[in-house]
Amino acid sequence: MIRRPEGFSLEGFISPPPPQGFATIIWIHPGNFTTGMPSIWNPHTLVYRQRVIVVTFAWRLNIMGFFTTMDGEAAGNYGLMDQQAAMQWVKSNIKLFGGNENNICLMGYGTGAISIGIHMVNSESKALFHKAIVMSGNMFQPSAVRSPEEDKPVIDRLAKDFGCIRKPTSLFIDCLRRVDGNLLVQQTSNVNWRPLLDKDLSNSTLPFLPEPIKDFFDRDEYVKIPVLTGYTNMEQALELDDIENSTIHYTPETFKQLLTDLVSGDIPNINSSETGCDYNYEHIIDSVLFFYTPTTPNYNAEIFRKTAVEFMLEKTYGSSTIFLASKLTRDNQPTYVYRFDMKPSTKAVVKNIPNWVSVPHLFDLIYVWGVPYWRQDQDWDYRDKRISDTIMSFWTNFAKYSNPTQGTSYPIKWEAYTIERPGLLIIDNSFNMSSSGNLNYKAFTFWNEYYPKVLSVSTECCGLSGGNTYNFTYILIILVIILPILL
Image (cartoon, rainbow, N blue to C red; front, side, top):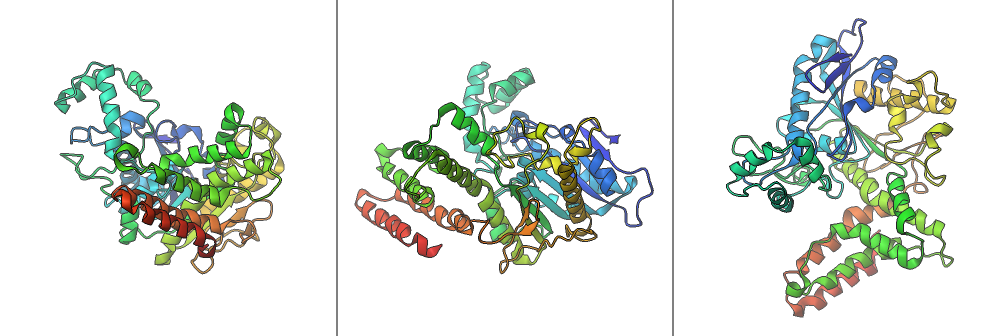
């Protein structure tokens, strides 16, 4: 391992590289843009078993990485700038370490995966990598980025908490710089830090993300590269388990309230006294409940829990993954999609999670990083080692060849995703391509096509007079009636 300036490390071989140099993976760690560090996942096993170079680095998080004053004094997106600086260093220097500067793969998980999507549309980042592994998150997830206006309450609160003058902003920033950094992080720990739409937020640098990512993709203005992407089959199960343990005893009423709470973040903050639009809220909720409420006459907690898990997975991870894959295949770039269903077999790993939970968020990284081989004194089940060998081989073969199964001896057929054959590899004991029986394509269509229309019509209502409420209601009723036909 070679350590560069603070937080930067590079792991690779001492043995001579191949003539073209080693494929290089740049790892962007997860952590909700708030926490995390590159050292949590040790790349040693992956590097030495698969003969690749792995570069990890730290980048600014939370208020240090994504705070903006909305007026040019503090532009925000500093964490993304750190990532780009690391990518530029690798592109310029990796050849000195036996790497191939023309075969660089970004690999990110969760917020790291969202970051990759932003680099795919950033004008300077585009030239710095050649393929991407996008795991358990992507830029098309709900609320992946935020508008700078969301920081106004944060600015006001910081000014009050630390006795800073709010205007001019230059004095406000000087005041914050005198506050202990740990205290700043602590005081803003409840802020949902995310990348910013930063057009016109800087006086000295170009915007990093001037408009929504979807707009870039709609105009075909993104880097055309091979992508491997996917998610686990129970991403948010532990989050749901926490909710259950604290508040929920499943009944039809509590199930409805759970889904209502989970959808409420998508709904604009409407002042019903001024617009009369609070009625729209119910229609949005009703469209989701119509699709997800179990139709089995004998309701029980197991059915409600299963449906809640499916709802959370399909809304946040499944639909956005399919949306991304569908966008990428328009340009005939190799796109490989997976769903990770293989629950660890080693008892020590799963002893603290409920029996009903399969593969929650982060548990697939156990196999990607070869964790079963990290310590010889830990008794890992042979099945976990076998799966880890396979996954490490697939991921690094993609980094090397843009095809996860090229150069392997595994009798596994992983077909590229296409519009005509929109298949996923189901990673379990069998490693088979998906079918209509194990993927709910109807749900993906609901979230990607139908639900945005409901939200759009709901928002438009706020500009209508009271006399047009009937027209809005009529549109929603028609959408609900034809939903089964459309899907």
